[in-house]
Amino acid sequence: MMFINNLNKREKTLAIVAVSVVSISIVYALLIVPLFAKWIDLNNQIRSKVNMLESGFKMLANQKQLNEEYAKVSKYAKHMKSDEQAVADTLAYIETLSRNDACLIVNIKPVGTTKADHYKEILIDISAEANMSQFSKFLYDIENPRDTLISVKRFALSPKSGQADILKGTFLISKILLD
Image (cartoon, rainbow, N blue to C red):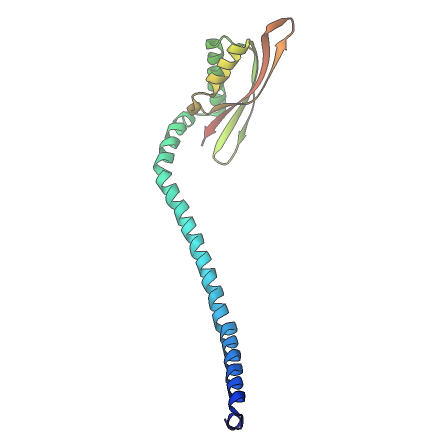
């Protein structure tokens, strides 16, 4: 205190301003910056939790619809007793479609069954002959309705030698079985 009394008015003012600036800087560096950083961190955590809650509410709102869709699809997949029975039923279904669409199946054979977490997939290889409209009808009938869980994974068409209007097609067909 004695030191300040020995200073003139201008030096006292400068000393008070210097002490004030240093004090404000210390308060800013040690108190305001950490509190502001903590506030930003908490704000980001709140935003993250709000986004999680919003997505959870959206899924919860769709849960009834998802359960209804699953019930529709699972009734087609759960009635299968064994892989062999499922393959036989799928082959019969495909043969029936080919007869209805006038598509001549030359060769049909199951490729195999693969098991994933909650489903099995049956793969069937088909060679067939037909014209373009019959093939398109056959492919459409396999893919629709979707509740049969049968889809065409791969197909290739080529003209049959000697007959320009007849095509040879090879298809890889997939049938999903839910556990």
